[in-house]
Image 1 (cartoon, helix red, strand yellow):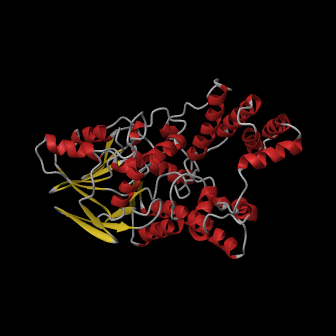
Image 2 (tube, rainbow, N blue to C red; image 1 turned 120 degrees about the vertical axis):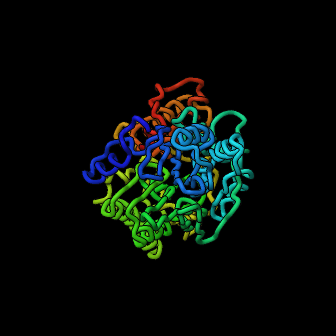
Image 3 (cartoon, rainbow, N blue to C red; image 1 turned 45 degrees about the horizontal axis):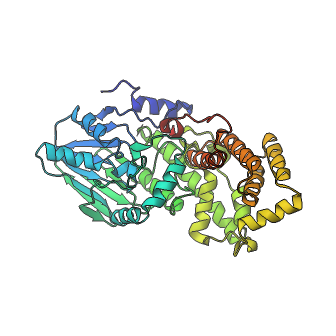
Length: 448
């Protein structure tokens, strides 16, 4: 029903050739019918729609800013009532559009659709309410290159992180739950992965897995540096379970559908292998007594997986997954004794500046390192310069310059957002832009 290339054909071509044709994560707002009674609205995130004799079963509702458009796209396809909404997990781009579905039922004089979710979703919603300001700050920073991230319901002055019209779950489950809707029987399975409340759906009649964010056509979001614990080991186990159960079609919440057993085996197998390797090697080094510093600079994705189009580190990064495994099993201390009870960063910075002789010595060296490609070292030095003298014009000018450079050469959206935020902090101190903002990428491009 849309004008974009057919998602199944595009997916198959990319997998069969191993050649990327971005964007993989399309936010077209268009509905595509992929089977007689199955359609997808490619939004942020997607909404998968299953037509049954008792109404429509929908996996996810997209975000607060896109939910109405998703419902409109569905209504252009069918007038059938909504039977149920499945939250694959409680992230806002998956549940934020639920209010539009409820409004549609009310306007049509039809019963409210049943909302199904894992039992941990209500606790997530309550945590969002408790930490509203914190979540607004970190999401604005994470999506720092996105001017108006309203599709997720996180942008704009005065907004609540969790929109008030998000529908609470009516039915929750712990391990498994079966949805009976007309001629369809769909199993929901819980597995921790990106979240502790994640679920994926299984329709055994056509060997189809509705995977939510277990598959998203980018490197798995299993490390996010600003968010709560992720679970890469259990994520990999869930992918292995989908393979073991015989999945021949994978319908994800971001990215393209995967059709064909061999393609499913390749893509899900690659994802599982990458997570298993990162987690396994991290635990091996932890068991040997290695520090976090040693581990994050030694562990990486196997060479043969690094160029896979469905494993590109465009949102999260393998290095962050390593940190999350360490955090899950080792706590917050990094193994450096000085960091157990550290001195204030400003005090340490002042000592380094005193040894160097001046702030300018640090900033000059930082700029030299950045020019030489030693951008990690450059950031350490320029941060010390600013910490030692928080209102030093030259230090802030160098800091903004270096972080814009670092953002430009960084692939993952999470890193880009944090580096852009640092550059903008220094520009705010200066009251001017240091370089022209080189961003301009849309969220879809950044993710795809």
